[in-house]
Length: 157
Length: 157
Image (tube, rainbow over all chains, first blue to last red; front, side, top):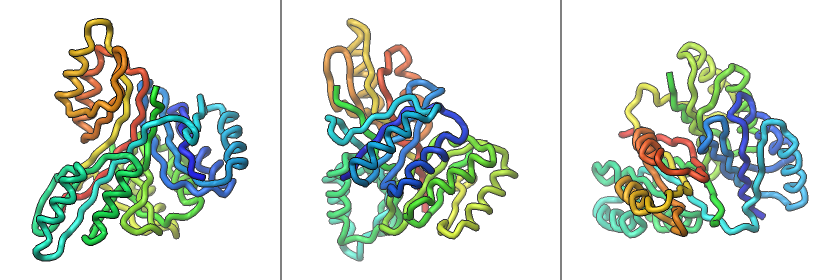
């Protein structure tokens, strides 16, 4: 079961290492992690996508809540939320396939930042499903480089 | 001096905790961190924005390179790169200011996901400068909630 855990933490030295240690000690593999500032400069928000059984995850959440620098923990597994991820990628087409590749990027609303030769450097933001769809459609082409932010989420309320 | 460090690491259990520990042991504060998959499923890319003096950072980079699960380390401080960050935010206007707020979002190409009452839930992707500009223009309004991915970067080549 995949969970999106969102933790508000004090923007302090060492908090990240402590939290990462807590997950890894329990044998959770982190699919993605994003740590960024929030509306309050003293507070960071960590969004962690993990896979693991529900019972162990429940224990991890309890332990997170006990850490003095953790302000609140939210589990988006069963809640209504919007999720987004950002990708930067450089993708190349074979000779004669460039305009077809441009079409795939355009159809998916990826934004071309640099175009040169048969390659495009592009930016793409979307939910998990849309990211998977884009990567599926890019399979006939060569992804030379890709960097992803990891998912962030926000409750629909 | 602010640096964007990009490290390709083995997508393995515990690597994140080890790297976060390395930065925190040296007294670096991490502004943002993004960990996501790459074009190779066995490899993750960590993008870390840190502040610190150049000499100490040089040592951290050396130590990173020595870790067995670290494949490569890149410092974007002096290189040509594109950087992007993604934000999800819920922002509210006072009575009668709603259309003005909608205008700020539209002008900055933020994408409205949910509109209800005087509030908007929106998605925004841009480089560091543009993110700062948007947040500056949103100052007259109330940011109820915000979550950020942290910056990712890719060399322009």
